[in-house]
Image (cartoon, rainbow over all chains, first blue to last red; front, side, top):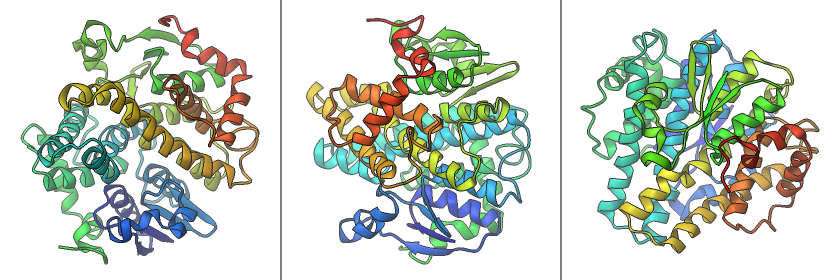
Length: 215
Length: 215
């Protein structure tokens, strides 16, 4: 397997966590999102993934983009250890937490969106950062409520084994910290993130540990 | 089953298509996104779905938000007719098309985002509509490429049976038309949308056919 990604990409980070939790060996291919006007826009990368976004997973003949589709693919083809619970209700809960991050938070703060705000709409740095923090605050408030009010939340988002929701939550909190978001309203999220940080699988997937990491 | 939605919500529309394709009977509960300052922000709805977004599916004890989590839940609990192909590679392809719409297009054009652009960033109507069209154009360009270059595309997004990708594509094209986006670069998408429009299941799910439809 090859994973085309970028050390700081939150969506690639999710996939690295899943690969790491499942102990799947893979080759990392760096797609630098800033160099050369963004290597994700190169012809060769477009041929692999027409969305011009990272990550892309290549597994034999298959080249698949979209981190959530990749997580589901890994779960179906390398089921152990499972990143989704066995029961349909639990699976729905985990996917809803994961998608709240993947759909409602992350796409709004993606590089291309921040560029559009700055270059097309002329939004200044301060307002751009406020935008970034606003969507993290809104999304994590919902996730905190989903976690705090359910007795299905354990050491991790769902029970005592890390899974798909944790693989989305940790990269999002990493971004929140980069932009100095206030974490005080999210005690459950912060606790779960700390539990994940203790695991070697999460440590290996961290941006700073990637071959293309920069200071 | 109860589906909390809004006739014009693209995410609720996806779920209606899936319910309709699977012939699942359900009760429609309207959450008016504009009335009363947005009924999705009411205490009673927040208790059901802390994201304060539609849709929410209630099935017995389960209340689950996030349209993509709902589609997966329906597929797992009411597998016939299947909305995902049987093979893992095909499932990855369908999910990647669906998520390109669900993650990369729709969240950027959601009501709350348009409100933020207008009220917080002071973006005028013309620039707001340009934003809307820009993300549709970008996302549908990628989806068109994914569809046009694959021999797995058939009458529908994947083969000759409608599925999860079609359930996302049709509502997105509906939005594109509402905002007068140029469709000329998307011949495959337009062809597939027309094939879907011939099916009673898609017709029943259309915004204009919902109990809360407005002119």
